[in-house]
Image (cartoon, rainbow, N blue to C red; front, side):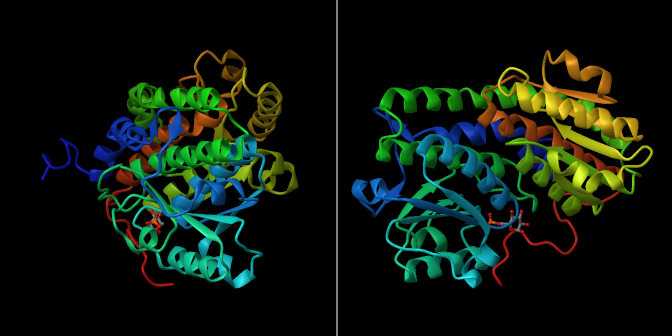
Length: 371
Ligand code: G6P
């Protein structure tokens, strides 16, 4: 009923609005006395301290959240991180051992590919830390440590609030590891956590752009394809934006690292092709910002219709944006938590305009329990 959907015609739209709360619930209870607190820990502090290599394994949107974990964990912990699709991981014969940490991210905790990756890691004596939204699911049961995202049940097949919760959970794991390894002291961990704790409010503010994004989505609904460009943490979000559009609107959509444009994708640009650009922070990442400006200029000159997601107050980008969606200015690593929201609305609204059921996209399942 409409009441169950919080007055919306789809659960997904309700779940998009629930994100500030989902994020707050994920952060709550996971920080106490200057330290990150996991929900279950069957490994010692020493085990955590000895970790010298991290693999992140996941599928779908969870994999995109995992790509972000790499930026945070390498930066904070000074330990190499590889992010891999769970379905590829164990067939590659990865190098694993007692000092390897495998972070398995799964909303359902039942995804077959991720579960098998966990089992393979355990046979090779690696430690496994699960990030999961479902209490007592199989993946957390078979892991050495667990951090639950408390995003609440998600009915829409395409991940929304559980994706944001996974991103936050990855950062919590990064902070826990940094603290155990001594690459961050308690006061720094506390400062990073307080920046995370400000994010539910930032997400609430970005939800105010929903109406504008709906309007521009309707104009995009009959395009034959949409491209997404990002750099640094904007790159995984470009991939996630493209995945959402495929899943919901059945449109051809691709995410690219903007630096790769001239190595191929720029050949796809044609008149009126919508290109969504995730703009790096002008203050936080000035160099990347300047490079992205020149990328937008290039594609606009070739006729693309540019839909730019940029920090509020970023005036330099305005002349190159056919559509400009402003998001709150937040620390660079945390930008994905706000920049994802307009992309969710974009794909849901394009799908609705095209007449599709956004809660139950064709051919897809919420949880894929076969390999
Ligand atoms: C399916 C869902 C996706 C989800 C993926 C991984 O493909 O349709 O939305 O991201 O599985 O699911 P998990 O439960 O492991 O996070």
